Image (cartoon, one colour):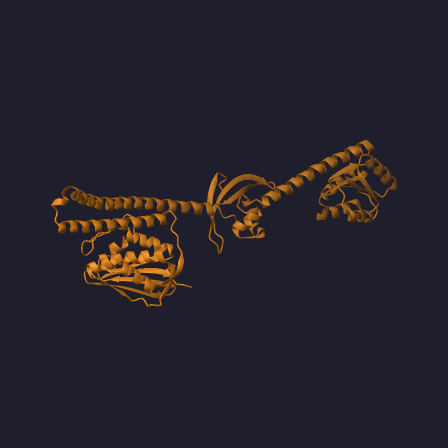
Length: 473
């Protein structure tokens, strides 16, 4: 129901108009002066005021001006009614002060109702537009994408809340500021927005030419694609890494297949001799061939074990179970395990670890690394030499060192040492062979232990392999 206030100092007119509009479904209240009108307005703001221009005391024009200058009453439609509107000057004065319409007296009931119906329709249209505008502003303000409007010169005239976030400035500071980027009005453009104290933001920008507040303007929408671009960059890096890893894997498997095939051919040849000519062989010859066969099969078993461990790591099935390990005892256990290899070359292990030295790690993993490194040291040590095992804490790292005095390595050799697919294995000091995967496996396992393997070496002076592990907290 439309709430209508009739303001007229003529009581008879008040009664007639009140009855007329109530019959049409209006909710009507009447006032004879500005004071009475403001008392009504304080209780409830109307939809329409039918205001007589010729009131005693404060005139209708003055009341009109006060109402229109008050933001609280911005939605109230004020219709002026008077005979003075026959004069164009008075009519102009009314519109100048904000009148929404006028009615010239005398006026009959039909015309009066018709004019008011038109006002009501107009008000409903305005109210609907305002509701739509408010809804649109709400949608724009809470849109997750920054939205701005600039004039042709690039000055910002509107910005939503998301624009505050991406530019790191309040709306008050954005309004009137230069947008700072070329506005082409065509397609998508990527821009980099620098925010003081923060990493720059990569945004996808769209620009559309519009009319805003009767001025040719640009509507700008931005979409933060920083995460997307960073992800694409990472994907590209991962792709390149994967290509390199696949290439290295192919090379490594090619080398391993050769390392597997050659010893099996040698074993097969010995087996064929045993099958066809064993009767013609002396006991010493049979014993020699058996030793060769044992050595070949031992090497192959180690290769298979290394490959199985490496496969577990690559497929995420390698489990770590941290526990307190007595390092002195562990070195002695590994030394005992490798005794045949050591005795064969008369090499001595010097265990410089203190008896009370403990480390928290996975015992099987750490044992596998140390065993591989000692086997490597035996291979490249001269007969009768010694291999020293020591440990120390440096900063937040626990170091285990395996030092040999063998042939050593060049800098080029060291650089390729832990690279998958690089065939850098060489024969030991007594022509011992290796499969090339042992050191690669050591590095992979060390990474699982949150550590790494480092090498210090000079050709002709021996090598020191260093296992770096995090210190126990």
